[in-house]
Length: 275
Image 1: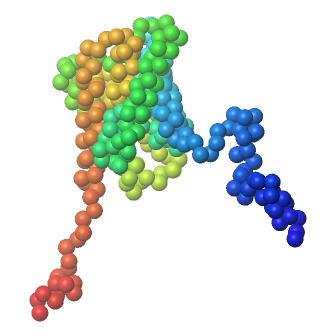
Image 2: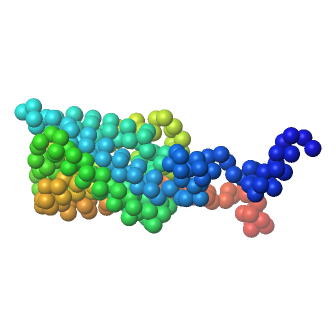
Image 3: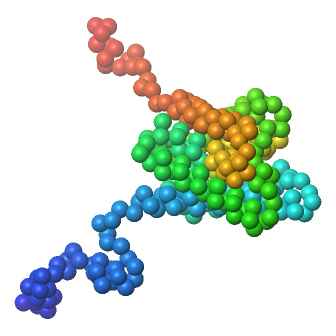
């Protein structure tokens, strides 16, 4: 009996199973380093925290550019706003995309649940995390920059109808691309995925900014509304992005359907009928 086999027998006689019990699984190491047993499923906690932190980063970045411009006595430039939103999405996608998918947006979560096979059981977790992240970011932004929360809110610049439809159309464009990246032939873009998504977010802000404030995200509008306790016209930003996201996914699925071609006249099945 060699040394390895002898040690295995001794370990088995001592009541341990070294073939299945790893060093980091040992209770003493778990207590010492704060590790958790491997039989505990951390996925719900991880995805909730990832979505919360990701939405916090996105919303705090938006609060930062708005507040900084306000404090400097200027007006928020559309290009600066769009660039901030797009770059923050790029950062978040590369940070948490492998954990939760980096939805950051209740409308995307709902649309993917309806058409994309995303589990409905996780929809409340995602939406709650996204809303809490946006609200917390607004609270921190107001405290840090010393500004009023109402400057973070999204309000229609023209009519409510114009704001509604521009939010709907822009969100459908964003989610149309997200659907292509999620299940289309370009889903293996690798390191370019974050830049593509960030670019289309910037495009959406450029489209919607002058009309509706550039939301396309119910959580982004709900957070400042809760902090400022001003819910006027909030229904636009709660409904239009969700409807637009559903349209975006449905449109992509409709035009990307794979149909079976009709049999050729020279195929065996047809030629047999002509005999």
